[in-house]
Image 1 (cartoon, each protein chain N blue to C red):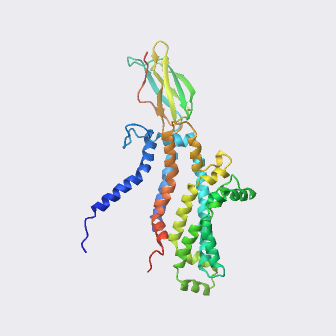
Image 2 (tube, rainbow over the protein chains, first blue to last red):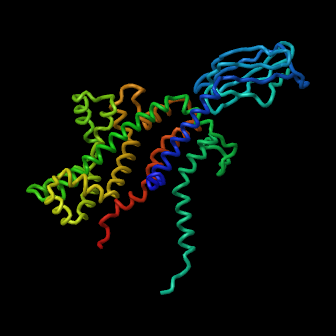
Image 3 (cartoon, rainbow over the protein chains, first blue to last red):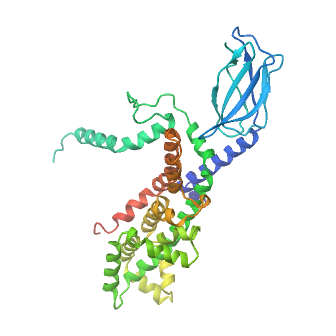
Length: 122
Length: 270
């Protein structure tokens, strides 16, 4: 029995199977599709009421998926987004736009919090 | 006998190895950076490496489906290869009237390229209603003449006395094959498995002819379809190549010892 367990085929294929199962469990428990962040102005202060648009990047196109408005603290959140490669753009009339910023995730629907705020500029 | 220094030989071998492995390294490097091959100046080491191209490949095309198709077809090919080639190899170790003619026929068939027999192969597969099926994809690879002779060479090394003793004990030919020949020829089995797997995994022409819809595509065929997308898919394309390459590499690395033993069995006497 010990010889079978220590056989290189068992170790390699078994290890691969364990890694695949562990990864799938991790994906299943972290894939609510929540993407959150916050928007700041040129002065670095949070911007309320800015429109943030999420576009999914496919192999050939950029498809708009959702638009949300920032709250009083400049925070925004998308939920249920089954994307792994997307572009965010924030804008507010009179305050400017952040431009399109590209983000990539490790798997579709990964919960993601944007490290750098979306900075508006005129 | 005094030996000279070995470092010049090792240095030369390292240089040759580097040259031979450079294309593979370049494919891997491009899969993690996405740099165009014509970029100037070319960078040997990857800059800003990431694994997102692999994620792109997984989601942009039904990669899991293609992987399953390739795995099923290879499994059928490997299993049938081991069974059928072992039986044919064992038959060639026995003495029968037209043995020489059969061996000559098999050797002459090895000289006919698969491309020359594609039309009759297609018509037979069509008549059997196996077009666009896993079995139809594996059918031409269910037996290979090279592996028949690998088995023959391995079975010839088994002492006759062992087989005679087995016959006296009442074992038939199938029993001798299963209980005596195959257990003593693990190297030949491993060689057969590795060769059958690699040939079926990398097969492109036959799936191109037999497959009718995207769901039944194997990895090499899917890769050619992937090529027809936008030009700027260099990183994803090379990531696809790496992902298609990994299973074959894993199988070969695991079985390489027995593979080499199987190919060199009988090369030296004693």
